[in-house]
Image (tube, rainbow, N blue to C red):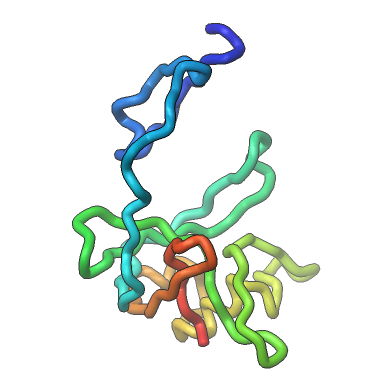
Length: 142
């Protein structure tokens, strides 16, 4: 494989047609990013996922069922109130010195907002969504 080729090992449904492609021969597409309106969603499943090349950074990803979409949507960020302002943060796994989820982290805010103690208990919960600055859905925790 040449340096200018990319290999997709874990392709999602939008990338299944491109398994191996010469990146230098790709043009600009004609399709706009499909926007999804904010709505109440149901969390179907929760998983831990490594981020980055090393996978050492970990985050929580919730697969949700949106009322206007057939496929599940993955959401790994929230909007919440902090210091009288609306903030946004990813669901990074931050562990405190006692080996528990760090109090005040975005993940702890989501757990408290959903009324659960453990991330696995999020499955089955309903939660409202909002759009971030780029138009992606985030969970609304305020």
